[in-house]
Image (cartoon, rainbow, N blue to C red; front, side):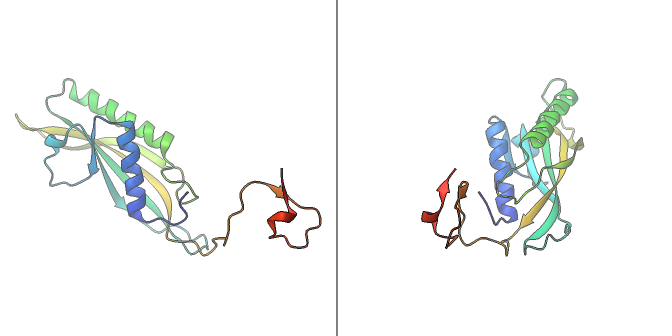
Length: 173
């Protein structure tokens, strides 16, 4: 369970989740200079914006990250537009269902999930088309100033303890 994260942690967690869900698809970071037709089929992840969110007062830096996954297919695919839309819907549904990429109160559930047409290159050989799945997600970056020194697991009770930190005075439920 993560208690302190950075953007690389979130990016890697999303990439790993996509690779697990779409094993036959190229999963990489978005690079507009890449030969996208050579990567197709592909999900290319990009962080587009990072506006600061309201501070929660625990020392972490809150942002509302705007993510985009470029869903790319090659021109050779039959019924290309319908296949792209189906691909984008599958990715959108995955983001909606799986969207808590890291545990530990460091990310919130994705919201404002949408899909729309993306980049394309119409060539007789090596062309591609894409749709983009876009969403926003609140991230809490960095370490909290409110971290407990020790984490007690489970529920334990004590009747009139003399030292509440002494585990021997408590019994598990």
